[in-house]
Amino acid sequence: MITVLVRKFLAPLALLALLAGCGDNSVLFSGLAENDANDIIAALNQHHIAVQKQIEKTGVAITIDANDIERSVQILNSAGLPRKARTNLGEVFQKSGVISSPMEERARYIYALSQEVESTLAQIDGVVVARVHVVLPERIAPGEPVQPASASVFIKYHDTLDPDSIEPRIRRLVATSIPGLSGKSDKDLAIVFVPAQTYEDRIEQVRLGPFQLTPGQYSLVKWLAGAMVALLLTGLGIVLFRPGRKKPAKPAAAGK
Image (cartoon, rainbow, N blue to C red; front, side, top):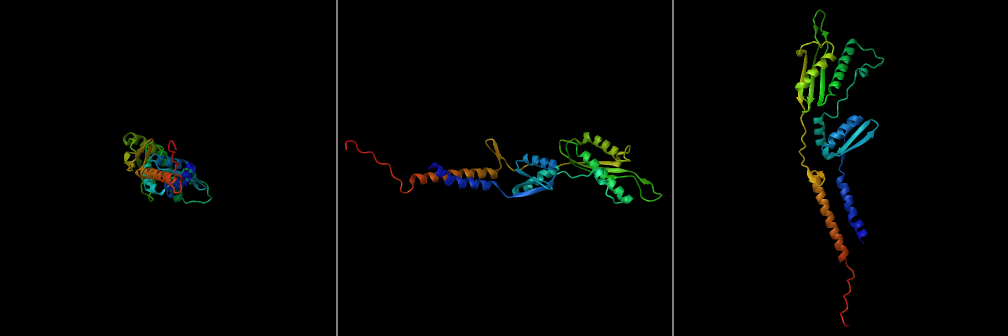
């Protein structure tokens, strides 16, 4: 009898709980590299956002609940994820069989050089975004003096990085990486540090034993618990007081 009761009343409740826990999923990113996908998953898991990882032909796709899209975008923006894809000198100047003009070759070289320096700066702990703009020595017109080399560096950083201590090393690294900047004054190499906006999760967490739940999840758990108790009491009442149930026989009176 108890088995029939469980199947009759608890099976629909379990199905309802399963459907309530499965919201509409949306693709947050697709075509990601494996390392970028893992970094995104780690960042979102720190804020208790469930992530599904799918391997596709074009790369890795990240799927999350549609209700978590806004929070996820803010979290990843503050962390500088996913990281910008960069090309190196070998990729920019790979053999293609097409003859380029000197101006095109120069533009490609400047672009590849800036990409290489950006990639190196991005390896520094605490750097969220690194951008480098390079100007190589160039003579604008015949008879005119050669314009000196210069560069500007933009660094968005977390509070774990100290700009005052890291700036001399960044300046030395960039100056020795770009032709014509070595030995130049500071006015030819501008470095700008901008602190990244730290994401603060404003969703209140409710502790339920060893678990931490959002208010919405806590309300769902309370509702499911109440519904389960109501169904159990209803089923128990049906079993005990169903029509046609035989009443227990009264004991015979003593002496009759």
